[in-house]
Length: 435
Image (cartoon, rainbow, N blue to C red; front, side, top):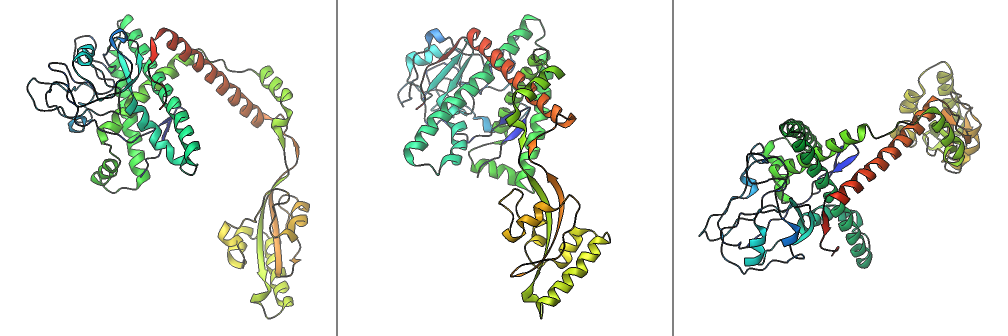
């Protein structure tokens, strides 16, 4: 079962299937990788962002083996409560048999990863480095890709494989962008001596994430918390994992929105008018019609005359002001009653039955037709709305549409510039190509 995306500020917060690392033995005395965005406790940086690794000591991506000294057993993130999840870390103790796997839904980090890489072959494949504090794992990117692949399962093998590579690159970039935003947010707050504001930001993100989770559960129609948790477990997810993913994404989105607030320029009237005049084809419309239909089948009457007589009686009721949609529900013997009273087809060449095409286009909005006779029965029509072919007028409604389009374009352009700046200064290293 696939969890539906949750929309927030134009960004889709996808909830991907979570895989668990199993059987990996870590280097002696080296802290386990922490959950995405978690740093080992410290007096200054126990905030959301991961504390991690220096790119200088990180080799190209490594596939893990089973060799290496044994490490301590730790508790997986599924044992953490949602509110303790942000500050809890998995700790290794010397002499334990094995390490419980950390969730790979978040980049894995460790303060002394260079020791780990020197003493063991890790199972984690690192695909990107961001500064000296965050890594992105292959597993995390794959989880984001897998939940989108269902859209392309109809493609033949080679095309599906190509699409998977395309999605992998896109998801990797999305994750990197998110981490760049979070790293920049923390750096700015720290420089301004306002790291305490991180708690306010996190509190906002937690509340928003909880509302999103409520909507997800509502969409599933689950009757109990346990039922919802079972649905998540069936996908390899836990409530803590999903909640933390949402919190992290919301924090990045909110920070980006705040940065762009003063950067994005609102288009003025002259710019809107210039766009309208420069793109006439964009505002060209076809003939469109919304119409209602009542069908009287000859097969239901003793004679064709009886059918026409009934149709004329209904027409008189409509002319007297009786709601046409109500008359459809009461008298229609075709498909319209089951279609909300609407006739089939909205553009030229689409009207069904085709015998009604000319009549439909000849009526004005609000006009009721004469009784129309075809080979199968009688018809009564009413046109509700009509849009004529041509260039849309430059009215207030269209101006608002153009303004929003230009504003969206400006916002996207500024976001691209922002990310480009962070990418240049954030020390991003992509150390693996799409599989």
